[in-house]
Length: 333
Image 1 (spheres, rainbow, N blue to C red):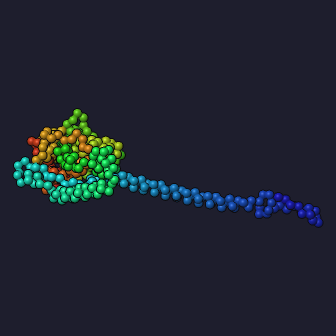
Image 2: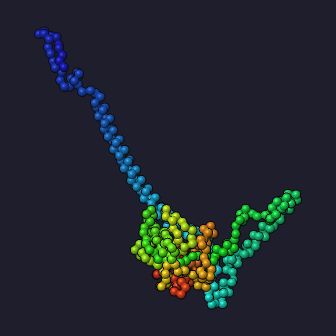
Image 3: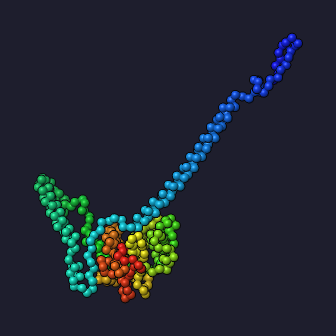
């Protein structure tokens, strides 16, 4: 930019330098633009750090969800905490003293009977007192309408456990089966999916929680004992048509071994109890009756390694007894 200054010798021209104010000078707003750019870069870095932190937290949450899922599956395979019922011992084939023991009620049953009588007496007394306080016309009308004795809401429609016969071990359909193939469950690391020949027209699909206890190659072609009249249940999307019977103790689990010479479909019975031919098992156990849950605490491996029910051994007629490969004094489930 050229400036003209009037003077003695005429007009004098001067050119403004780079730092002089004028049309070519750098705008004062450029500095604030630079500061805004630096602030924007810092905010972008902060957002990126927050994004990375959220990704890491999501990965941790996903891993925790997977762990809880596997834990839930493990707990589903265990006893669900249903109150257990004391059972009578099966009668051994030739023991008069054992027969007397079977005929006698258990101590817990004897102790429960007076309580039941006491409750019945209290209920009768309460009903009598209530009837005496009611008007005669109303009581007569109720008797006319129902024609039946009054029944409490809690006990209506319920049957006692003994009347249902849920304590009879012969109701279990226990059979020998051969595992044709076994593979990992596609949606659960703790589960195996086994195809099992149990002597029927088609093999059954059994889902078991053995992945943490038995290597997969050990199950291929293995003979085992299966409970086959449970109601089919879906395990992580795959329907399981039975349960492989295992012994467990001190964190170790192993499948029960049938005696030599058995074939898929051979029936497993209990010594001293009617055979499956004499008393066929239920076609399907009613899950609401909790029959297996009541019998399970009394299905044990004894100190010699043999599977049994209240001390009476499991056996395949004419071929031998069922046992655990190595465990002793263990629970069967």
